[in-house]
Length: 182
Image (cartoon, rainbow, N blue to C red; front, top):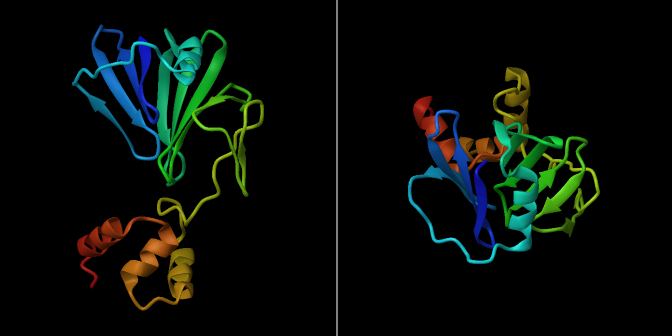
């Protein structure tokens, strides 16, 4: 990680460099998206506090892994730092959030601190993932899937897919199209 910039309240830009010197720009937009870009963006003159905290812990460290949690809209970035392993969680649902967690799972910093019905995002507390909305389509058993579809009670297969697997309608329609199911 060469540097980190906070382009606006919800958007971070990570400047990454590979061993061979090639530079990548990774954009993380809380609640919406993440992608690589080749475009240079205007950066604020004075970085916000959250950006400074990320720089303190992650600048000049190694990004070692990026993975999606289960089939949920949470992406985990794992870093090898001078202080040990750290994780940055990007939540891509609702208003989203970006949460920095140490190797023990304790929240160090978050874009937004909040108390919720099912979990808290507060400095010093243990990080926990949001409860799953649906079944993971990559690990659900055939029988469990059939039962969940039957229990949904919906006559439209696309709606039953959306409710059972917690995938968007667009993707549910694509699944049915690819499977030749009307």
